[in-house]
Image (cartoon, rainbow, N blue to C red; front, top):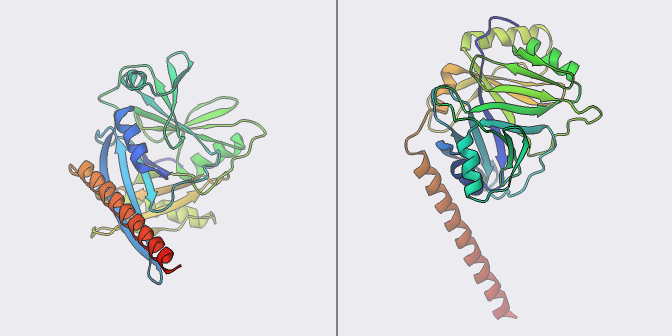
Amino acid sequence: MSGLEIQTQHWRFIVGDRLKEVAFLKDVLGMKILRHEEFAKEVGHSTMLRTSKTFMGYGGPGFFKLELYFSYGVTEYERGNGFLGVTVVSKTAIARAKALNWPIEEVSDKVFRIDSPEGFTYYLLNHPTPTECDPIAEICLRSSYLTATIAYWPTNIGAKVLSEENDQVTFSFGEEKCKIRFVCWFGELVIHRNGCGCLTLSMPKRQLQILEYRSLENNRKHGYLHSIEEPGFVVSCDSLVFQDLDNHRVVIVEEEGYAPLVSLDPNATNAFDLSIQREQRRKEQKNTSSSDIDRSNRNKE
C-alpha cells in the first residue's frame, strides 16, 4: 500500500500506579511530561468512570510519545505477552539508572535491559542521546506467525519492511521515526489481557478516507472511521481502528485533528502533580469516612 504519508505517534501503556511510572520515565530515562488530562464519564446511575492520560517523551517536534492511561480505583492489570519492549538510545539513561541503583542488566554489547515499576521492559543503547532525532527508536512486539505479520502490516496499514530475518521483521513508517519490530518465538502464541496497550499512527485526513474505502472494499474488519472527541476541545479527530491477526490493536488518526489533542502543554507537570494531590486527598477522605462508620458501628454494639 504505497503513497501513504503515515507516521508513528505514540504507544499506550495501561498503568495501575501512574506516579511511580512517571517518576521512572522522568528520573531514570530522562523524559518529560508533555501533556496531562483528566476525564470523567457517566457509565451508570450515580457511577462515574474517572481516567487520566499522561503523555511522556523527549519533546522534540514529531517525536514519538508514550501515553500512560490510568483508571481510578484499578491498581493491577494482566499484561499478556504481546508487548516486548521499547528501545531508547541514551547512554545518559544508563548512567542515571546506575547512579540511582536501579536494577539494570547488560544483555549484549552496548545494550542494557531495564524494567519500569509496572514491569514494562526498556532496552537502552549505550550511545549518546540524539538531539536532532528521536531517542525512542523502536517498539518491539511479539508475533505468533511471522509470515502472517509480514503479509498484514504492509498490505493493510501501509508499513514498509525495513529489515527481515528468520525470526523477526522491522517495519518503518518514515525516516528517523520510531520503528516497529516483531519477534516470533516459534510455538509461542500471542496472548492479550486487559492490560495490553496499542499503537497510534497518523496520516492526512484525505488519505485516511482513502484507507477506509480500501478497507471496506476488501471487507476488512475494524476498517470504519469513527470520531475521537476529548472534553475541552472543539476539534474532533477521525480515526480507523485495525487489529492484526495476533489482535495487536492499531489506531490510525487524522493528523489535522490529532495534533491539538496531544500538543505540548507547558503546564503539564503542574497538572499531573495537582491530579496526584487531589487523588491523595480523596483517598484520605475515604479512609476517614470508613473509620467513622466503623467507629459508629462499634458504638451501636
